[in-house]
Image (spheres, helix red, strand yellow):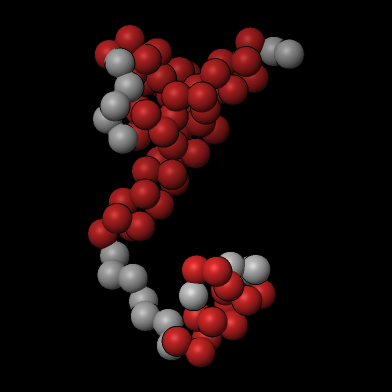
Length: 81
């Protein structure tokens, strides 16, 4: 396994904490250093950061009840109806 691949996989382990602002200063510094050197991870982190932002800030669309029930049934989530 190349060093870059190892560093990228190591980054993924702490990524959620990093994006939520809950990672230690040491972990943040390590991730930020890696992002300076790895364009693929930079793109991934930027995309994930935007996705999280949109999830938290956009209004959730409403789903008609009959469609909600059909969806839950297909997903075998009927106990949540």
